[in-house]
Image (cartoon, rainbow, N blue to C red; front, top):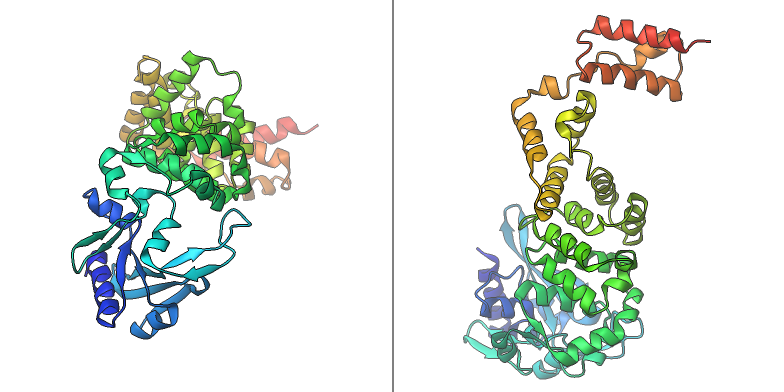
Length: 413
């Protein structure tokens, strides 16, 4: 059973029990565009307690807001999941994110509290009927992103919608309706009330999209970039900006999150890139990879002239393919050749593992056997022997031990 078939069955169960039930929001938009929805949401006049009585496996993840997850059969080891929400209207949004209270209501009232017209439609998959109270279908045909009702009110309810507008317009190649765009510009400075984690997630989705450059241009044009990434907006002349955008465009259709962020942050220093990643509360893994990519974005420009130890150290790093993608895009954006990238790719393909990353010839136990306890010098000795091994000036354990003793004796007063 597919998620779509399961979502139809949930609607049918609700309707057979005498309730109104419709697909809602993004899945309706995607179906109208001929796309496969990421997930299916259902809106109904049944309250959470009624929904839970109709289905054997449910999770009341947001019962106070009228939201229940209905679990279906397992697919690829996981249950199919459909969210079922009671038609509602929302009270005030004192925190700029969640409604202070909700009142169960009608489909029309539920549509009017949603963010954008293209996300405010309902569809009955049993009857094959569209319910559009907000003009979403017309806007979808016209390729327009329009806030439902007063855009200032919609954005006041949840300031993250300021960023969501950019991501949605980018993803579906929509023009943002003038009043909606004007409201975004006027309210851009209020975006920081949104948690860093929610902002980061919007940026993740935007930056890995094939049309990321259009999205970045929108962020700049609407004044959002200067609010969430002010470091990128200082001292930028037009040629530099265009090179930067060409460079981001050349990352390919589906870059990793760290690669996309590294490209975005390349104009700033390593320390600033680290500070931005920390401020956005990116994961430690993402942050570490981003900083490494920014730090080494020029390290392989003359790869064929690097010491073998330096080159191999770069080639065996887990982020090497992202780094090569960064180098390739930067060179192509500048109209330069990519011989250094191709050289590294050949090395990765042709050099066996024992050449690229052979087992160390000596270990910490060998250093300690010389009476040297863990300390900065301890690591320096291990690193020096490892460099010699990767430079291929030594190749056996005996040679490694001999070099270790020589280096240790030279350091003894």
